Amino acid sequence: MIFQQENSFEVKGKIEKSLVAILPIGAVEAHGPHLPLGTDNFLAERLAERVAEKTGAYVLPTLPYGQVWSLKNFPGSINISNESLISFIYDMGVSLYEQGFRVFAIINGHLGNAVAMKEAARKLYAQYPDFKILYLFYPGVKKVTEEVREAKSVHSTYFHACEIETSYMLYLAEEYVDMSKALPEDPQIPMSADVTPTPWEAFTSTAVLGNATLATKEKGEKIIEIAIENMIKLIEGAKRGFKKAE
Image (cartoon, rainbow, N blue to C red; front, side):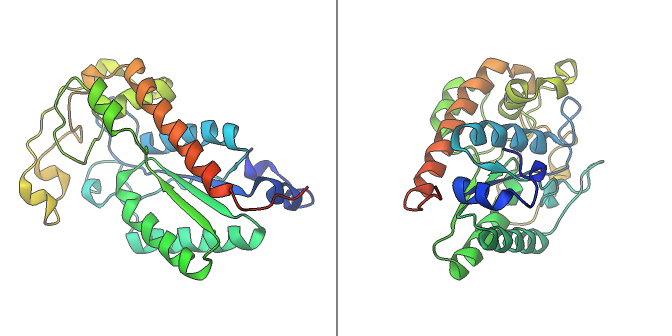
């Protein structure tokens, strides 16, 4: 269900029946020559739509900007501070709770948003202990990712415009992918990048962290379907205990 398509006269009763609001959140940032700047937004939106179909949740308008400090100097990237992002998510959560939502599921397409999402969730929890806030970033996919991956990961945490993220796009938003421009990159990320602020131009000129030429729709499907299944389980679990309006 698409929240912005509702009207004020009917939405209150529908909120009481749904109880769940999903916020797709992404970013506008460089993703190499083969993926668009809005890759993280497209992924978050498509995931939110799929999850909402199975949970009866409302999908809120996408929050299209994120914390992209590491890539802010690449052409096209738009950076929002953690402080701004925390405030935005927190304020939105307060409004959603006051409107009658009891589960706020944030489906994230950009790893850089994780810190702000968690902090906003903690602030909301402190104010509304009965408000279930979920911050979801491809939950439970580590095992299947390692099974389908052909190229060695260039970093233990980061994946970006690579075999994996490009596979996600081929499965969820193939119309935005140009595989003829995909690159087989192997950047050397220094250990220091994990312990001190390091703009990504220090180790990549393309923003591609891995071999994107190995991406396939089939790999994306195997990983994404597990992520969706886990998100549905988490949302359904969060809904338990709340009495729905008849």
